Amino acid sequence: MLLEYGILAFAGLAIFTAAGVLSIETDSMLMSVATIIIGALTLQFGFNIAIWSFVAANFILLMSLLFLYAGVGAVYTAIWRWPEYIRMNKTYVMHNYTTWSRLRPKTGSDNSFDTFLNSDAYEFNAGSHKERLANWVIMWPFSMSWEIARKPTKWIYKTLFSVLGDMFQSISHRTARNIHNKEGK
Image 1 (cartoon, helix red, strand yellow):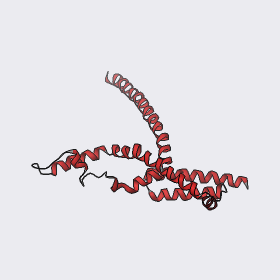
Image 2 (spheres, one colour):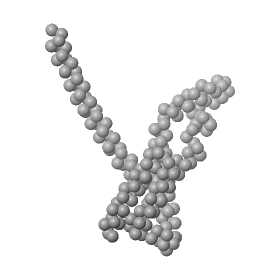
Image 3 (cartoon, one colour):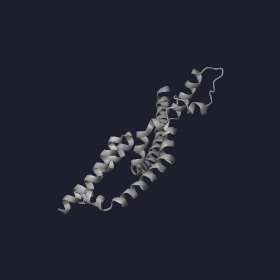
């Protein structure tokens, strides 16, 4: 019986983690809900924790923790995730600004960037991204963990690719020179 719970708990945690990361990568609220359901099922059947009894017995404490959790998620989203998302789309923002300012009348209109930010042409208003922002607030532990794990991995990959790329390029040039020197004479 213990072995069954161990395997079920491990499988549930693996699926829970994969679903959480997938929900962050796809910005999918549906996957976030699926992750929460998988987590609850894993606690219920993998760790034999009676979820609904626990919630009923500790309702006020859980609501307080839920507000704290949402607060931390909101701070994380406001400080890191939302600005990072806009920075990732900086080319798009600047292209839209350039297009917007070109299409506006030349005389008598304010073509400043601040006016653009308050116009319908600026597509990164928080109201237009409610689902994405809510998803980041809800799934902040997965988002933060994924960012922490992914950034060093990407850096290592880019560094190795650069070093190996330079080495392979040097080998390519040396080999081509040798061929040229042998064939060219």
